[in-house]
Length: 169
Image (tube, rainbow, N blue to C red; front, side):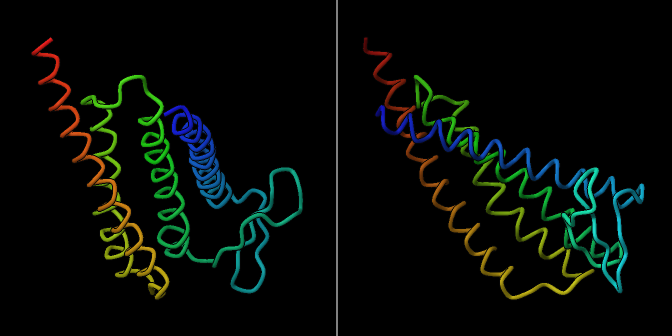
């Protein structure tokens, strides 16, 4: 179990950092777009530079619909995804695995993966063209949600057995 705890701690830190990076990128992109700072416009593209430099950081189409549905929505969604994923990894290095709080973390993750990607793609399809690769990503999120649902059910059973055992001691 020590190996599992070590691996999950490392993955927890990596996914937490990724969540923050996605969030900061989304906030910086939105701030730059709305305040028109660190921006260059070429042809039909808006280039957002790294802070305090002239080096390109983000290259976006020059329309608000694209910014919202093809940049901000996916970036903030993946910030949420990595945040919830870090919470899943955190479950596996706790002293007590089978708790209601840990099951709640797993439940939030699988519900977000089962429903949120489909809802976001459906909603976005009214405003932008959805590329075929997005449907593959949707299927991957569905499988991930189903997998974590199964793990959550195992944790539910573990909690039930643990509570029954506590009654007999």
